[in-house]
Image (cartoon, rainbow, N blue to C red; front, side, top):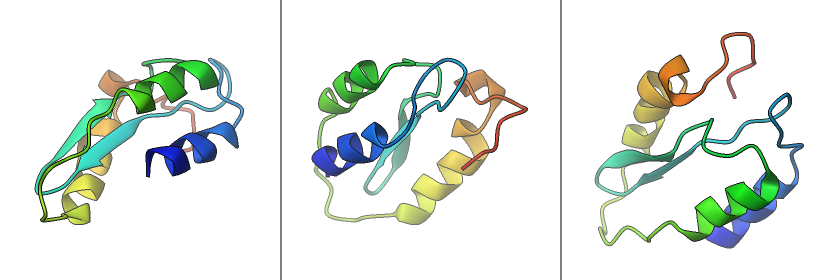
Length: 87
């Protein structure tokens, strides 16, 4: 999965004025692994992804990850830009 995430990130033009990347890890619970303003380079984002640890839980609650993204990640306090499209 981490390889897929790095490959996906590589397909975007990550920079301060272009694409910003945030990341949520989840299993039974969801947490923001890094916000949108953690790094503005592809190499930095790949390093952040490499630093993530696999969740040990067997239960997978993608609903909680989507809620965390909607309620917390896509907020200005986590680096989301008001004028940018939130995808």
